[in-house]
Image 1 (cartoon, rainbow, N blue to C red):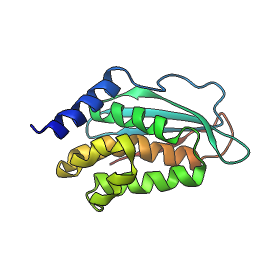
Image 2 (cartoon, rainbow, N blue to C red):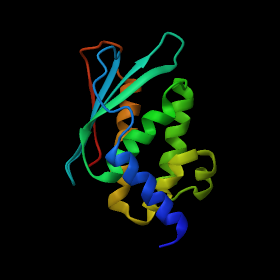
Image 3 (cartoon, helix red, strand yellow):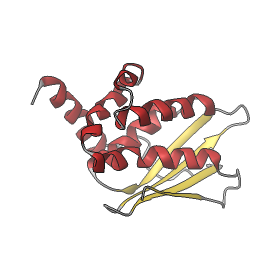
Length: 154
């Protein structure tokens, strides 16, 4: 294993063991649930989209493999404080990276580049992108606190 692969693995394991922004968000005005029926990963993303279109807070709950949980953790850290448009653009770059469509996308993704090797394992692409698809569904959901969008990576 190269030093870079070891670093990537270390970051993923750290975010899996100690996920950032994990927990309930009672003040959320956008919600979505995501599920990967192939492996059983499940994630709930809740966020506060303020009047100016900025994600002022975001949290997730759920369970899944290390890649799924680390991706959700890193995603929440990456989008907190970003505008909706910036979060959607980040989603597009991340998705292109994990699909192997744009290897250069990693240069603008900061720590999210740790998922660049996922494209070599198609089953893991769904693990890495589940939280992101769920975030996208939450952003597109109605503002009603009692409504939740659902996404499946089948």
